Length: 242
Image (cartoon, rainbow, N blue to C red; front, side, top):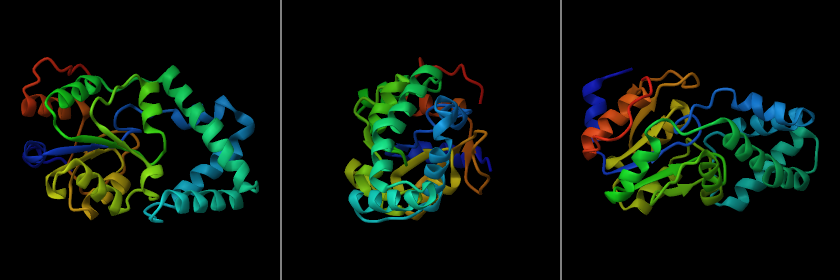
């Protein structure tokens, strides 16, 4: 659903932004395939990781330790490997491999780096919240400097989108009321549902992976155009198609 007036109002009235990472700040197409092709022998383990993550959608275990204990316990049942072995694989091989693929094959969406610089310079509160850990390392692999933006993942909350508590906690950390916090994401069932549960606005960035749901949406270019208008960023790139 696209309501230009509603989208413009959400951006204009926002006092803080929370960005999703994967699929929002870069085009995620072919990422899962590249993960498998980088290590075909681990295809079954990668599939087990993805099935486990899907099964934990919306779960909130209250602490990172409890979350990861449950995560690797469930993954162990699917992959039929010890949980400790899977934990070591995940943090020592899988996440670094993700960073390597990002570094070699992906770039931030046009205008994303300039937007982060402008938000930092204008002291506008913003954050990046991902369902995968080590957001700082993955942004670095993309070549995207978050500046003063705050970074969050499951290692901070022990929960997975669309659980509402992490969104509310981020708004509190940014010192902005939830109803003045705008979430920008590409997965309506995760980013949109979590934002709504926390009482926040949400804009869906149109992409091939974006699920259909009754949320305001627009292309990345259109979003950056409206941000230029909000912040007076007339030099911000707008070369990508919407």
